[in-house]
Length: 351
Image 1 (tube, rainbow, N blue to C red):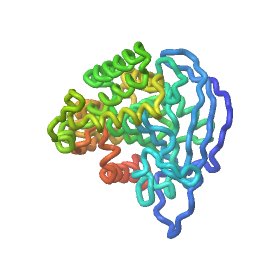
Image 2: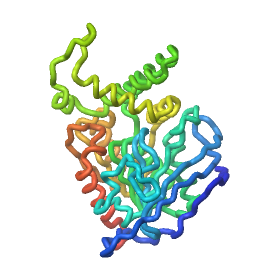
Image 3: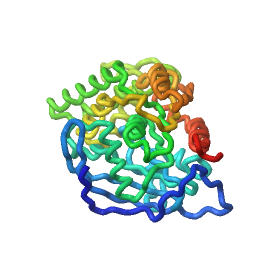
Image 4: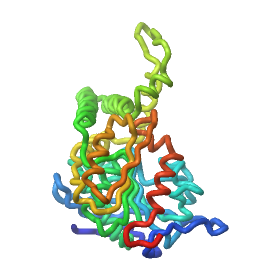
C-alpha cells in the first residue's frame, strides 16, 4: 500500500503495554483533541488503487490506552463534544465523564469512513476500511489499539480489522454486526437503493434518498416500538390517508438528506452487502453484542459468528424495543457491556 502524507498529526505518546484503564486521579484535566487529515493511495478490493483522504479525530489523555470507535454508515469522526468542537457528537451519551469511554481515562480515535464525503464513487469493501484504519495508525505513530469498538457498520469493519491486522488490536467489541450481510437485510437495502435510483431518474435525488432513509428506519426499529409510539387512528389530510408514523419518518428522511451525499449513502449501503469475513480467521478476544428483534443482524447470525470465533468469542444478548438502534438508545446497558469487555484481562495479561 502506497502512502502519501498531507497534514499528518502524530500522537504525542505511544500507548504503554498492558490493559488496565486507569481510574480517576482525583482531579480531571482537559483531554487533548486533535483533528486532522491524511492522504493515502488505498488498494481497494473492487476498484483498484484509489487516492483517498482520511479525516480523523483523536481525543483523550496522552499516553492512555487507545480505543478506536466506529459507528454505522451515518456516523462520523466526531464522537462527542470537546474543547476543539463543542457541537454534539453521535456518541455523546457514551463518551462522557464516568463512562467506560471517558476521554480522561482512554484515548479515543475515530474517522470518517472512506466514501462518507461522497467523492468515492466506486465499490468500497469493509476490508478496505480496515486497511485504511491500519494506514491511519501508521501515520499517527500508533503501533496497536487496546480495543476496537464497532457499532453496526463499524462492527463489520472491526471484524475485518481483527482478521487482517490481528497484531494491531488487543480486543474487539462488535455491537449489532456479524460476519456477513443477512439475505433479508440485503434485500431490504437493495429496495432502498432502487428508491434512490428512481428518484435520480426523475431528478429528485433528495426525495429518493429521503424515502430510502425512511425505509431504513423501519428496519432499524421494531414493531413493538411503533405500536407504543404511533398507535393512533389515521387521518384524512387533503383527501389522502395519513398514518401516525408519517411525520416521524418524514422528519428522519429530511434530517438525513440534509447531511448525507447521495453517492456516499449508495456506496456505503453497497459496502454492507459486500461484507464477508471468516470468523475462524479472527484470533482476537471478541465480545459480540446482539439484540433480540434486530431485523438487520438477527440473533442467529450472531450465534453463528460466535461459533466460528470459538474460544476467542463471547456473546452478550440484549432485549430492547429499539432493535438494531439499541446501541444508540440503551446507553447504560451498552456502557456496562463495554466496562466488562474493556477492563477484563486477556490471556497472558495480569488482572
